[in-house]
Length: 458
Ligand SMILES: [Ca+2]
Image 1 (cartoon, helix red, strand yellow):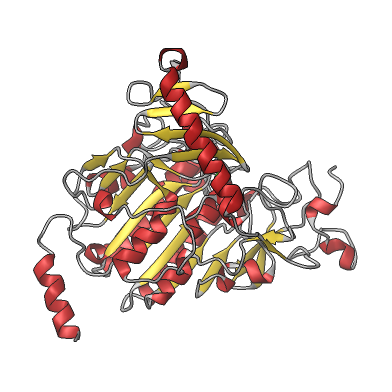
Image 2 (cartoon, protein in one colour):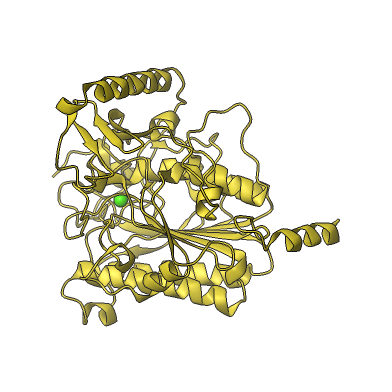
């Protein structure tokens, strides 16, 4: 049987748009990076030679969207292939994202991207910021990852965050806290640690198919990079972007060294638009916004020999599409009878001639509020503004008055979507007696583990 499969793979490999065997998959997910922060997307401020090289050897996706403009819901959508509302994670229990000790988290019953890869016999590893719940049943190793190394939520959720009384920021291996991020030098070291753990995992699993999820804590504030990056940069933002670029280079290099480049699909993107200090241009808005700058991400996909080198695709794609698309590529299973919002975009990734987006509409949310829809070139807001993204990517000119019939049609599309979502969404995971992973400094006993949101802000 193996011989027959190998023969089939060899015979189809030469046709354009045909998958060249089952690839390893690496998803590099940056935190809060803007659309205009890297060379392939026009940055003149930051030097990103590795991403430039990745784009030259791969494909730029210029209309790739995440499903939310902030961390937790965006990651929930990536992992489940669903709009965050569908899986109850459009926000945290008491804030727009999950906080330390939050009783909410990604429902263990949801079928994650990692569980899908496991169903296909892949080794799975997560290296970086999780932010889908820090209670035992929500952590990566309970959601399909064989191994985990990283921080369980945002790097600013530490005692340095003055508005809240956060515990120390833990670094975890699997389910155990192994160290604390105590100062800016520790913050500056996170990109190195996550990258080296991912590289180690790739080397250890080079004989098997593997899935690596590398959600960096960079470039989310507070920002610091290692000294060799800081010394050549005008500020910590540039240094972090350039260190993230170094990380991309390390991943591509180990794949080449291990002769895995032609067997591995690497996708680079960001979890939401750029925060202060980042560049979202030419888009309007940034992190938190329902304008393009909040959710359209600088995305590059690379798979030498299979994805056509040096190409660009402007068709609408979303982070939610990756789950069903990878499932098809690797022969993984999805849960029967369960609604997901992602669609198969394999032909778009592989550069099949004439391939079109499977999305008639893409919906923009802030928390659980539907704000806008994109359909073809049109983007229509709930409040009535209309933009033609084919001519006005920066959403500068509201042309609703000239196209009332388009506005009316798209408002109806939003009504229908909203009604369906209310009827057909699933409950968030809720933990009883949730507590933080580590104590608040200077507090004694169980009191030190109280969920951050249950404490008064300072
Ligand atoms: Ca983020």
